[in-house]
Figure (cartoon, one colour):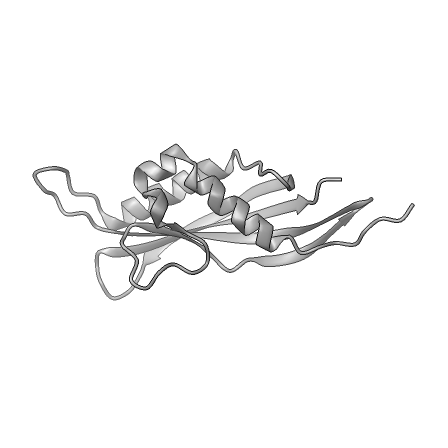
Amino acid sequence: MWCAMAVDLSRPLKAAIVDHLFADALLTSLVPADRIYAMSPPASPKWPFVRYGSPIASPYEATCWNGATVTVTLHAFAETKKATSTGPFYAGEDRALDIAAAIVKAMETFDPDGLDVIECEWTGTQCVKDNDEADQWHSWCQFSITVIQPQ
């Protein structure tokens, strides 16, 4: 019996993740779906927004399975929301961390059509000030995702 070698599935995985995030109600309650981007957001996107980061794909080979293990980074950008008559103060770092937590929660149910997920493991989140502005923050969540093409 001949079995195929590992295959880079990072492109279809990216599309499946972005589609999955678009459809997640908790995440889209924090970030409108039209601000969830693949790897290339528009110039000067409106905050808050989410962006898919640069993946790192590695071969995954098991008996007659062909696939990849992909390190995926999902970025959340948020800024402080000042208190107004229509809403309370919301610190940028808290917003960025809340968006990151919603991403992690969304990925718990990641099960795309056209790919079989062997493992989707959240490996960590970090939050930093995005630039010299005191009110702009950037969180990122990293996942190790092993996928194969269905047999």
